[in-house]
Image (tube, rainbow, N blue to C red):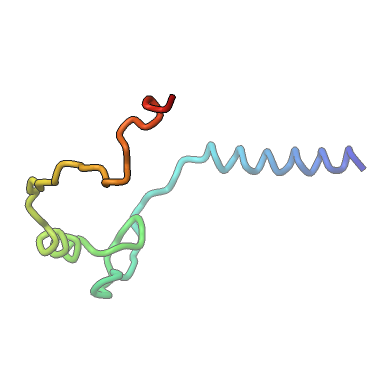
Length: 86
């Protein structure tokens, strides 16, 4: 029983090794745009270049500095309570 199992494992490992070592085929395939529905050649199913540019333009925001109040502990919290313990 063990030899049959090891043969199965060996065949499975050979398949996995061949899948890992094969070069990826990243040629564009015609996909429908997820936003407008037009067909464009893309490597992955996504939005078309025109929709991507529109989204970047409409969602672009300027970075701004945000002022945050200084941390003040609650009244019931004693700073460094462990060090004051005698």
